[in-house]
Amino acid sequence: MAIKTSPEKIAQVVELRSQGRKYLEIASELGMGVGTVWHILNPNEKYERVKARRKEFRTLNVLSTVVLGQRVKLKVKKRPKPNICELCEEPPRGKRARLHWHHWDDEHPEYGLWLCLRCHNGAGFIEKGLLERYLSLKEEVVHAT
Ligand SMILES: [Zn+2]
Figure 1: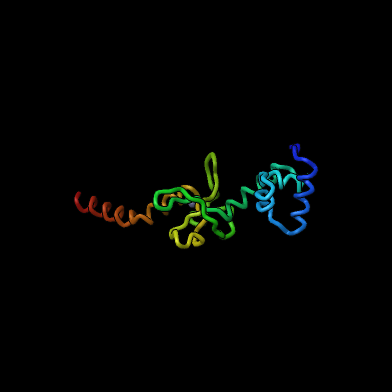
Figure 2: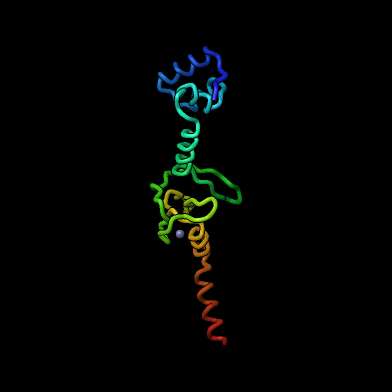
């Protein structure tokens, strides 16, 4: 990807970075995207690798959740992600197979488990108290017949 940025801007980016400034700070100060800053500072890196690394970073540090009916993104330091679901111990399956960060306390979203989609749904079911209801409904059916 070619950088369409003036040599002056490039020099400014390099200068700010040498002062220890963060990519995001440089981007906002110079009115450019953080991706552009990144390309200037890492001209030989492949963009696909950057995207993969960013995705991995978001996976481990950002939680998309619903708080008071609003979808929000929270900065969360999650535990290292295993290759298999921590509950059923199977690798995630399906088209967009991935592990999901299941948390149960919005005050402490860092407390969580890496679960496959099936187990994540199951955990939500249990968190809602539906396990007890399911078991008691089963009992009712068995005793009623
Ligand atoms: Zn699972």
